[in-house]
Amino acid sequence: MISLRGVTKDFGDFTALDGVDLDVAAGEFVVLVGPSGCGKSTLLDLLAGLTTPTSGQLLLHGKPIDGPGLDRGVVFQQYALLPWRTALGNVEFGLEATGVPRRQRASLAREFLDLVGLSGFEERHPHELSGGMRQRVAIARSLAYDPEVLLMDEPFAALDAQTRESLQDELLRIWERTGKTIVFITHGIDEAVYLGQTVAVLTSRPGRVKRTVRIDLGNRREVRDLRSSTEFGRYRHEIWELLHDEVARAQRLEVAR
Amino acid sequence: MSTVELSVPLVRKATIGFGFLRKVLYRSAAIIALLVVWETAPRLGLVDSTFLPPFSEVLVAWWQLLADGQLLDNTLASLGRSLTGFGLAVAVAVPLGLLIGWYRPVAELLGPLLEVFRNTAALALLPVFVLLLGIGETSKVSIVLYACVWPILLNTISAVRTVDPTLLKLARSLDLSPLRLFQKVILPAAAPTVFTGIRLAGAVSILVLVAAEMVGAKAGLGYLVNAAQFNFAIPQMYAGIVTISVIGVVFNQLLVALERRFTSWRREKS
Image (cartoon, rainbow over all chains, first blue to last red; front, side):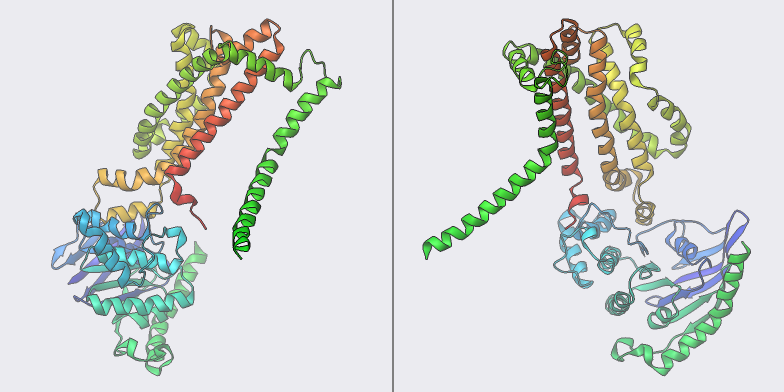
């Protein structure tokens, strides 16, 4: 459904991404994991159509991505909620962009706030909500206008560990219910293994896909304390090994700068 | 039984009333102290009562000015000029600021020039205005307009330019048209900062006008103060000054209330 072919992105003489190849099937949950500064966010911006590649191709259903579109929904790390609007108003914001008739907006927005577990918080403003709740609003907003793909840029990075874990479960539940294709970016190995059907490990500077790992943990939400299981540990270690060299290299580059 | 039930809410009401009264007293203590000093210092001979008459005498003079209609005429003359200049400044500077802020290169090009204008005291330009527009109403309204434009314009420009970039990114990812982006993101995001500029301009409009009226005018509170001083009607002079500061405070409070209304989402913090 999504395919990246030799995607390269330069900023001046700095190469952020160098020949990224990746395929994402419809309904798949793919996690991109990499050290900081590996061009993860650049890759997401490219998928969102917010920027164009220097060379290579990004295809959605075989057609090149040539700009932003409502077939893709972006969830940002910093929530990007409009502070002057209520939770409901923020979800409606996405619907206004798609031209959903005014009368249907409110009921649709309520439905999706309910989906992310925020019934009863419709009239709260963002500053009256916790970080986790804000991100739930943002997720509801992206889901409400029904994009095919959800692009998530380290959405849980700013949250505390417990909130993060509960939102991860929540996201898996939503993914199962809605069947969306999800491209999720993180620098957390645990998060990558817990969420991804496929985990693509990126190299640091310039970013390219080092290896993709299929994660087969069955239905995650049926297993109690999956994170402590041996299979989880095995996958975790495999990705840790792949990332380890990259993190060390990224740090050396950081020092050299 | 019934008396007890009745007395409980009454007591509570009384304590709330008392708390409110205490707050009002506390907040006005400094002003009351100033007025007490103003009243007693001339009476005790600490200052020459010819140049600083006791506050009660100023009040009497104020009442006389009010009674013979002078105060109202001059106040209306001043308010008319202030509000016209201020209103025109809002009407011109807000749209202009939005436009300049939106086009980044324009903002960068004009930025230094605007800084020069803002930092040129408006009153320094008063002779120029008088020279070009005469000493009539036009020059007075123009100088208020001129002085009010800068705080509004500069605040509006920076309001547009400092809109949270993640919101802009969001809007772009939703493929919002430029018009929608402006209406649904930029305008509401910029509103609080724009209002700060408007509030600053409100204070400026009165400051500048009074000074302008002292230079050449046949009516207005600045004229009243100046003429009273000239005729050695010292209590009347202070009465004029007090009126000006009361008007300034009231105008500012009005603008603050308006600002609160428009940006209530910012303050609802519990």
